Length: 399
Image (cartoon, rainbow, N blue to C red; front, side, top):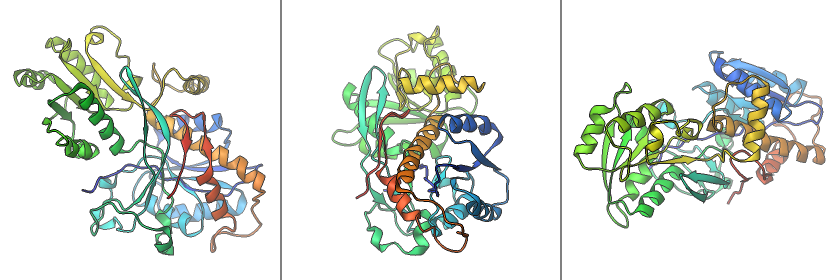
């Protein structure tokens, strides 16, 4: 079965100790946050593209910047600018990131290549599961995601990749993949020995994230899963009454953060908060909400998070963002900001390695030929290690 993935593509760059420029693609709401996080990691020179900039102008601008000074390119969020930038960067060995996780379902099916490559990370990160803590390790693999011609994951050799495929190579995933949340849910269900549950979701496409969980729920023992879609507005009383009439006590809520507190509040009003009712919330940003307020503090809730809100790394970043007058949640930070920070922390570690390697840019254009040190810098990135990041230690591994 083909599992749609969200990923963050790392765009590699040319580095100098004296000047490291970021070329970033942001919408207006993200500007201040990203600038503050970049400053936290020592990146001062930033060129910002708006999301509505013409995609065709992106490679030309990146090329012009390459002749001036070193650049770290963060890719655009929207199709087709993301693929055009990746194509340019890949062909000329310019490393690059996608700023946001990409949902393959948003890319026209005809544009999905059967040779698209995804390199997952082997980042070992602490996950909070309610009162339980577990270290989940996502195994490193090279696989072929959803495509017209291939619906099976398969390992391939990098030696078989042609130059035309290089645009989508070396994709490093720092966002938690859908497979991880499914594995966590399976562990929770097995831990409590549930035999049935209700799975609530907002849109049908949201179920893509939980394909593995639904498939694995039949092995080694069958678990009855009743699926219900959430109303478009935050009016859940009728749905909650239906769940109560079904005599179901175990509920998985797979929804955006705006739905969580209204849902729990209405569950409290329906006398569905006390044991044996048990709610598992899959949204990684649920820890940014205050779930201790009355009356929802009475609800029996398990929350999944990739951020330890009590860590010194989270406290330091929160303090820095507050100095920049950035609005942050009362608790923790959201997973997007955490991944931005960890991506820059990874790049910072590579910059110091590149400095020691003395990989200085030469005075000639890189617009028509690969950068002479691009592959060496890419190799340095793969070998990089970050011990103290927001989401835990990061270590990349390729096999």
